[in-house]
Structures are given as structure tokens and as C-alpha cells.
Image 1 (cartoon, rainbow, N blue to C red):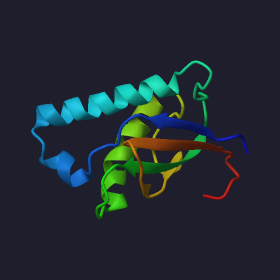
Image 2 (image 1 turned 60 degrees about the vertical axis):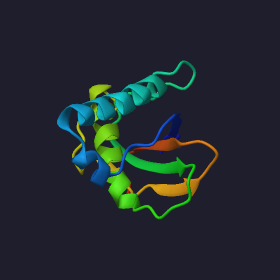
Image 3 (image 1 turned 90 degrees about the horizontal axis):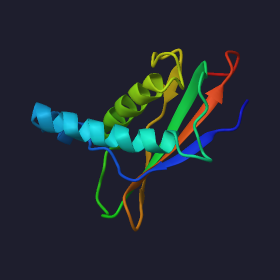
Amino acid sequence: MREPYVCTIPSVPPSNNVYQRLHWAKRERVRKEFQEQLWAVLNEKGNRCPRGLERVELKAVLHFTERRRRDSDNFGATLWKFVQDMLVREGVIPDDTADRCTSYAPGILLAESEYTLLVVQPCRDGDDR
């Protein structure tokens, strides 16, 4: 198995509940802003995400500045939609179908600033799913 690609996105996505309640134009701005930040880190000099992977596992930890109850699956819905779409667009994976991309509920931690730690683990076809 290849080494994982690890990057830090300087924000966290909105929860699915918040995202779905936004006006369509605001939703588009929020998605685009997060994906632009992700694009920047995927193409960062010295830490560029590998391209042409057949299958990946995705893990993340969302860091928040305020202590409160949060549903990780609710945040995972928007996080993985934004991330998987960008990974396909950038040629990291050919498609974001379940046989190409496995994602897990993100972890949630308290931190001094809000950010998302993303791990893209390349998998071989024979690896356990």
C-alpha cells in the first residue's frame, strides 16, 4: 500500500442541515469556497496529491473552536460530497462511486482554529474494503 496523502484545509464544511437550508446561490458559494481551498492544498508545491489512483479510503478530522454537540455524519455528508467531487475533477480518482472511494464518518475535535485534516489513503484492488 502506498503512503497516505495528508493535507489541511483551512476551514470546515457546514453541516448538511445548515447547508440544505441555505438559499441555492449561497449554497453554491459555500461549496465553491471550500472546494477552492481544497484545490489549493491538493496542488500545493511540495505536498501535491498523487493523481491516477484507482481506489482510495478517505478519513478526516474536523477541528472546531467551540465545544458543542455535533453529529459527525451530518458534517460528513457535505464534506465527502465536496471532497469526492474535487478528487474526481482533479484526476486523483476516476469516479466517486463506492467501489472507488470509501469514506468514514469524520472525527471531531476542539482546537484553537477551525480546519479540516484530510487523509487520502491509496488502496490496491486486492485491499480490504
